[in-house]
Length: 420
Picture (cartoon, rainbow, N blue to C red):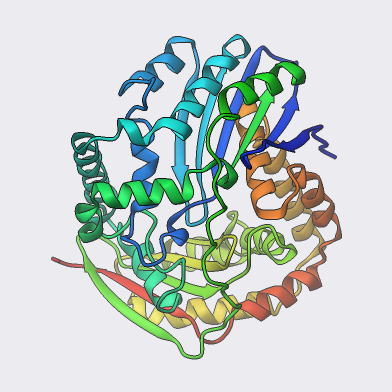
């Protein structure tokens, strides 16, 4: 089993700190998770959470624009950030001798970003995000598929209905007032968790954290999104979208479960059972035997407030997508009502455990996972619990969970070749 030793405490301003020393290599990871993603935007303009992922690298009072990257990379380190429905994470990997510099950089943008904010910086990053949306979504093959299926499976005002990157009209209309309000509300010490993992002494790290983060003003935690109750679709909803693509693609979606629940872990195994390998049930049927699909894949997108099971199928040119839809649904229900063999269970569980352990091979990965687990479950060492759960999940558990959430009603999007 995996067991990560850590210490957790809070500063007076509310910042949660998790220290996990590991002196095997002279490297340290700094990982800050702000409890804000697109789900927290509420009635605000969409795309604000993702825009901040860019804005936070544009300079603060003591760190000029571009220098955050420069200082980290010149020291031999690396850095990045990402945004989801639920949270935004900033992470740095550094030689352990540069821990203090990394903490200074992260604290400066947490505490002193707004005084350095100017219209020119905002306009520049809006342009960057606009181009990102055009390149990866609006003008990419199948690029709007995920956004459109969200709108079909989640009802109005659901926190996961809007795309993380935001809608173009909202992105282009964001102004300094929007940015200041969002930062003041969500980029506060009490709404952040700092994880430090790697080669450091805990006492020294505590002194540095207090030195650089302790003086940042505290404020109350922001209100979370309105509570979302589990729901099932009461009717099948279908849509067709014409795109500049060569092959038709089907998207099937069902409301699912919260992240890292037992049912979420069961769905990870179910996904492998259905589409995870060349011997999985749907892949073997449609890609290998019938050769009617180019590919088929099941993913479970889960979050703090809800989830979505998404089955996608890229259809070969000579196949009628509306006819193959029925075959796919029929085969799905056949598979989740069939016996799962002992060999399949062993293969699926072994594959999950191998991948889980492989994903913890770097200080960055461990720090990131600890912060994620802490955010979703309250336990930074939750991987140990997941591996224990894997051992207790049975084929019958998987069947019951699949049958519960793969209902006869679903959302379906069909993307067909053509001119927009």
